[in-house]
Figure 1 (cartoon, one colour):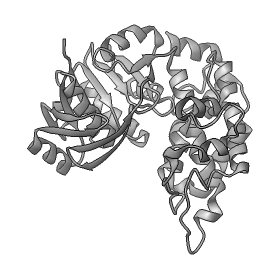
Figure 2: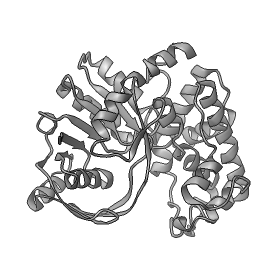
Figure 3: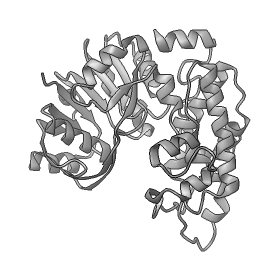
Length: 361
């Protein structure tokens, strides 16, 4: 039986998932803050998808009104950069109804914890199922509003509910339409499995002199920017991520193991920098000519610092991660949001055992 889905966000991922859900027989409406995007989609009546997913996904409507898109929705999916998660949550909370499922796709790190904190701060008692995905289902780019090219679709994306005792409810809400989302233990696994936190901030900051050179010489982010020494540093950070996960009862693959599994670009003994060079999919991905990019402005406050916060609660030292956060906030502090630290997420006074009870239910 089909459900009504409200997709929050009309960017690359939002338009892709909205069109795909429609093709799979679901009733779909979409919210975006840009009137021109909404008008273009309404004029077409839906979204054309190309390549990995093909077809025209008819939408019920697109709108800039949060109350309208959420009214009568069974599932509400947030498909936005994590920079906007907390602000959009504040707009959503007054419209939450008992029985809704809210799904962050993806959450970056600790997005579900932050959403619950917004609900608590606003006094919401809505009985919802709250879930989060570890990464976006697609590699996708919008050609124009309502015209979406999907380069590829992942065969599996991890998801979990907060608390994890709602995992089966989450699966029942999401998987009939989107079977590629698979349950994992809890949202600690979706949060700590976020390898963007490893692959984006440190290589950007450790290439600062090259990025700020005058004149700037373009170079490939992964193929040239991920040098042997930078790769070694990222792997050292990754060992801290693995240690935090272990302290919280979660088993994760190392970043090398992730690359071997995802891209088949070497084996577990191949250094990270070489795995990047061996990955043909990275050919042509260029480095920004400024540090003020989402790799720093988003992935520090909403990916790396939440991992740092979990480490604090777990009692695991993270000197390599701490160093990157310190460098970023020293250089770009006035441009960076406060983000998700232990205090803003409301976990600063929790013990490890209390955190696990909150996460698992």
